[in-house]
Length: 192
Image (tube, rainbow, N blue to C red; front, side, top):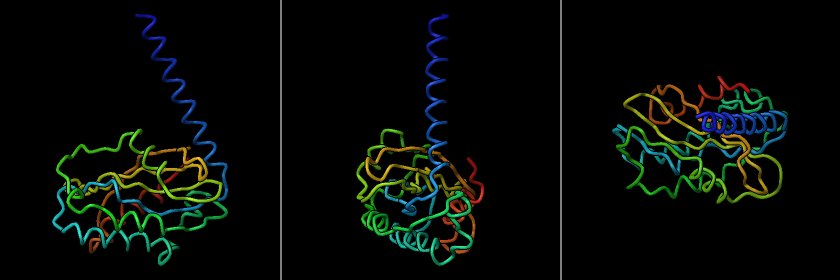
């Protein structure tokens, strides 16, 4: 029993230490490339909109980071001195979403660490430095909540430096605003 307990504590301490290292690295980096919100793995639960309407809203949500930059302020919320926006890759991914798989029924749907790592590894990015992307997990209208992974990753190796699962209340007029609100709540409440 003692051996099992010691092994569990050792594993927990390694996990905590790795998480702290990633947190420190993400915090210290003052310049990032922000890719926007990737909805390509998301499941929409309990929604009344068609997949086509949702996909259109996804493009419009990413536009908010430039059209409403004061509200969706990545610079200040994430304590970064230099943020380069690069939405082309994520907009391309969002446009290729298979509409037949977008609407889900599993209220417990989550993206595993392995699935997320594989997905980020496939991103088409150039250069070096740190990237930041929101990966949408579940848009749950039954709970009026959106679930996302806030992911910092190395642009060259595509290794995840920090992954924090976060959620926010969904509300607002129109599909875009309804699903943009959880993102706003997440960035506004962000703290290292």
